Image (cartoon, rainbow, N blue to C red; front, top):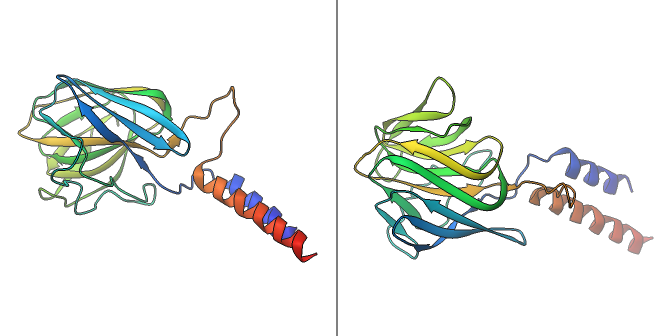
Length: 216
């Protein structure tokens, strides 16, 4: 029983531990929008990008997410395939989710000389040398955006709960993004749902309890 109690305590005491990051599967593109889905456990979240873009890979193509500079202690796995939205023209761009997500992730490829502002606090989770070279993001004074000093490849995180993200960037020859999450915003109407790692720990605790009962 002490083992079970310890496992349950660990499950609820470590809500910031994540089993994986969930990245958007972009599935279709229109004149000024790209649509896709996020599969988070048993939930499917629709994701729509709207605004100017120069191209989108929704089924194959060059994998710009290699080499992998998209992992960190917060994000254990980077984008899994070649899906990407590509920009050349700056302007106002919006990403909309069909339900609220917590601390969403933006994967960046080749943000060279761009100035971008999300109008909300960001955390730089990883950056380094990627498909097009090396660079570093210089976060602005308000902490809501960055300037791309060289070829920036990496992941940033917006802090808070979002149903949409609106940002502005400046024009550049080519740069790209994808979108991910670590989890969904708990729904107060249905109670707080533990993150995937916590669920796994809880499952292990109950498995240990069942084994102890069988042994007795």
